[in-house]
Amino acid sequence: MKIWRVVGVVMMSVMGTGLAQETGAIKLPPPEMSGGMPLMQALQARHTAREFASKALPPHMLSNLLWAASGVNRPETGQRTAPSAHDWREIDVYVTTPDGAYRYDPPTHTLIKVAAGDIRRLAGVQDFVATAPLNLVYVTDLNRMSEASAEEKTFYSATDAGFVAQNVYLYCASAGLAVVVRGLLDRDALSAALGLANHQRIILAQSVGYPADNAK
Image 1: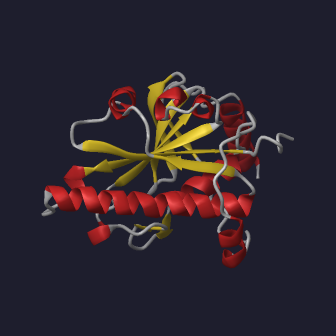
Image 2: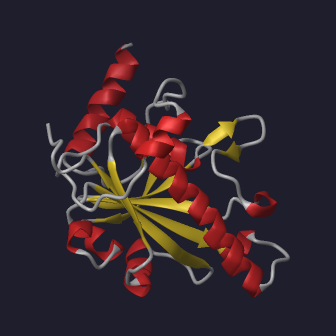
């Protein structure tokens, strides 16, 4: 219990003002894999919202969100909550917050820092993108898609990113969060800020936070 309390305090400090840790990885709390809204109710509640409260997500909710997006749900094989063609697992989830950008590592359920500072505004062109508590960015690693043609890489990476985005939509519906997925953004600027290599491509971005009328 003492260890868990320390982790919770550190994560609350980190997420309460953005991810302020300058170096190293941030271990997320274990995801909660039970409870939540029944699937059919989540599908009925699923919708897009473009207005967000400024309140940061608490550590346990960020943990649940990322696990729902593309976490490991079969530890014996390392396979994920979202399917991927040929089990390439080519989609990486990046997180932009007020204090930095991170890559989610599903096997360790950890956030790995890739950039310091607030680069949220680069994750889209709408005004709300710069102030949403966090933006998820879905990046495909083309090198993982062995023996695929250029056309197949484009098709499958877009499809697989869509699976991840829908997982996020359903989690947000269940958790009462606001969410919107977007394809319109300056990919060159965001790629540079995230330090992406030539074989990595940004597919989509998705803003997440509390609804604007639910800041408390």
